[in-house]
Length: 61
Image (spheres, rainbow, N blue to C red):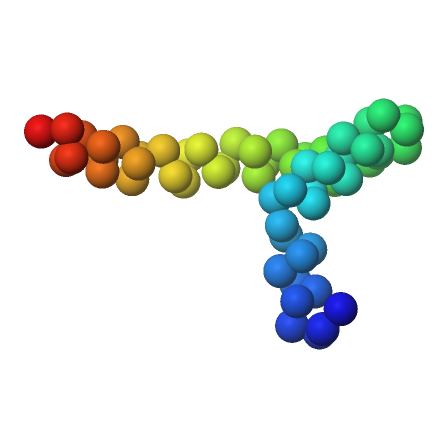
């Protein structure tokens, strides 16, 4: 993997969530992995919902 791609992959929401889910299924997850995954899953809708609703409201009127 190229050096510049490593930090992007490290904070990819899909990777964080799948790693936490895989760890939970195998019984070897830690709190940090789980907290990162939950934070990303909570932050994504909070970041993207307001602009989406605002854009939808503009186009609907």
